Length: 354
Ligand SMILES: [Ca+2]
Ligand SMILES: [Ca+2]
Ligand SMILES: [Ca+2]
Ligand SMILES: [Ca+2]
Image 1 (tube, rainbow, N blue to C red):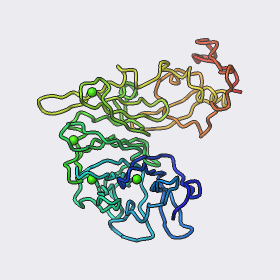
Image 2 (image 1 turned 90 degrees about the vertical axis):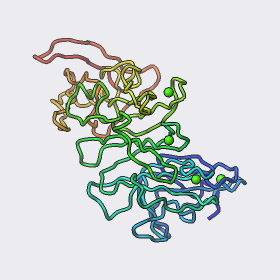
Image 3 (image 1 turned 180 degrees about the vertical axis):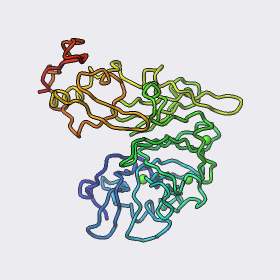
Image 4 (image 1 turned 135 degrees about the horizontal axis):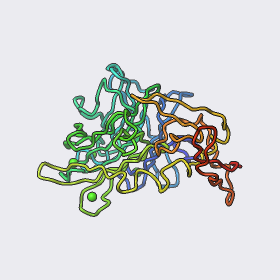
């Protein structure tokens, strides 16, 4: 189908810009994380839009084979994909894709992470079936993937960050996958020093030692030593992670610089600058506590109470975000700090969020 992009109606939360067919025109990959059915009226959540060079785009998602299924091939059914990154994964001069999928624990009869290798003309074939990164049976909730040649061997590697499985009480370990140039990727997370711990200790969490609750990944050389650092961005006040690459005799290892670099948090590490939390407490001033048991401890947001001052924000605020309603010059500011009240230590009181 050839059409201006606004008539294709792509929708998604993420986009890659890449010239996947090497014709000199930047193409678009727009995606969410849902199903992709190519028959008329089917649900779609991923669009590979080929730039035709005359101001138009054509929907090349199905014809390119980008979403082809391995286990149950079907021309009308594409896989769902949570995250993509695009680069020359097999060093043959054309752009390939790494496709990351959410997986349930123990699932062996479903599609998996895949490498899609480009034939040089914008058509994709599935990478090796024995790619360890397919990780069949392992639970996964990838949200973002970034390419990096962390060991500088001339072969692209992938930094994949994860979120929290639905209904779970733990986010997952982020992963560094080392490429071998054939489309295979091996998990080197632990060997590279990137292991984080489950959510069992709030001190570890606040020191950015726990698993991230990541929504985005990137890699770049922040200190100009030639080796790329790895970063992610976490949900809410869960610490962001920054891993500094340190080359050594046994290869590159990563040092957790999240807190020391000030990347983990913004300047205010308590709730006093969190408008969403402020407004939640304003809306529900009598709330005795929002509780969530995660891992081995209970996380709480209790309006006006000490735990609220933990930098870690873990409890969803019932889907309400009031920040956008604020207008310039009307930002609420804390007042009445640290006044004793009713046996509870009052830490903040707030002006209206209007
Ligand atoms: Ca192109
Ligand atoms: Ca390639
Ligand atoms: Ca590499
Ligand atoms: Ca560096």
